[in-house]
Length: 123
Image (cartoon, rainbow, N blue to C red; front, top):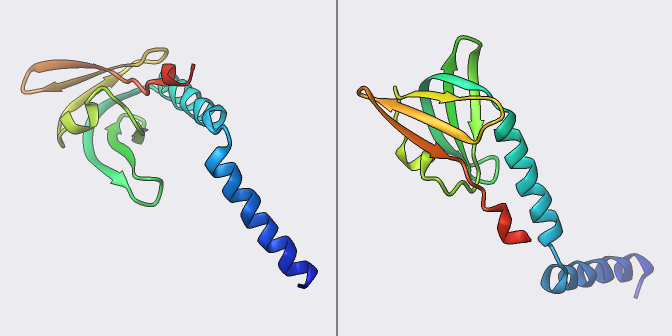
């Protein structure tokens, strides 16, 4: 067997073993914390222009907001609050900095969502 083939096969076996038996919770926990930090720091208020599952980015739940600052993306992958399934085009949205709270206003009725990525499951 050629050295190049041996290295290729060995790499595949090592990768398979890592995926099957390796502890990936460290990486998932870091990703969850990063998502939480990003949403916590986000500021968004305006009208919802569109919302979709982003097929080019791991099917991330994405909300497009028309605001005074232009078009903003609010990306909430794996959120457990129900926000993405509730929103409609034309809803008003308010998201303050240093908060996981998102308020949706539709027909003079307000509904509060607390974005939750369930990061506690990794502890």
